[in-house]
Image 1 (cartoon, helix red, strand yellow):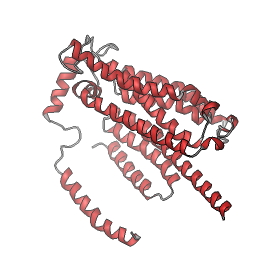
Image 2: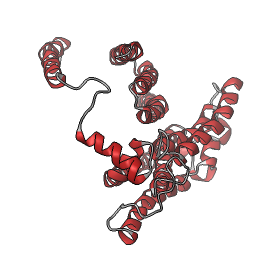
Image 3: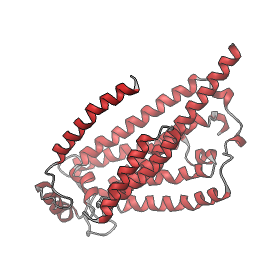
Image 4: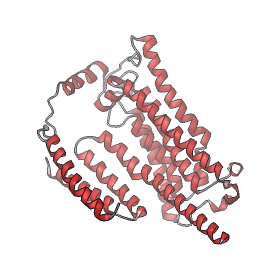
Length: 253
Length: 89
């Protein structure tokens, strides 16, 4: 399609989309002014009956725990897909001849400042990730956020230009195991609800005092399980993509 | 709506437009990660810190790493194809 054709299409579609958006968004309650029943119910149930103080985590791991199970396996399936496709590509090309020696796997661009920076970032990111996973039910955060922050920790090694060190800290088998164990653990915690309470993913653990670390029943466990899965999933995706560039024969690792 | 929220919205509008109008994929990727940080601030000032936390890492780091790796791979493939054509001709 020519540039003119595209512009003509946009001249029709753009205003059309704008009109639909204006009609659709007209009459929304203004920000901070929500009076829906669902919001009021959630605000009542979660702190009162589940002793959770972060409502978003409470929604994810209690009221909508089953949706989260689905989301977990969406992530799991898509990461598996990415890994399968990229590994197929890697083998198809006979990359071994192109793989370079270990010493070449450092970028020339990693300055001392960048390396110090990554050294500072790694412990901070890991600490923040662990904090987010454990305090999911108390303060903003939770399994998913914890997982990506935790995954970003080892990724900071890449900033220092040490990709092979990253592969050593987070080898492929460990990432695959993390991903799988996290996903399974979440499903297994749900089974606990089936056995010890009345329904799948129903809370079966003591609720504790609101605001304390060990409170909100099984939410901290769910949070940790999701955190493990997301850490594994993101690191696996990143390293699969980076492997495509910095091709490393298996025996070099 | 507070002034902070209005400013955050405007920055996101400007950032999104800039990302869409940048032709070079490499620059676009870097802009995208900055745009992600603007989005994270937007979520934060609209009282969604949970979403802001994920947004920071997903679009500040996660997505750019994948896109950059893919761009490099494409450049490598192109270079290899060119050299093969040269040797065959």
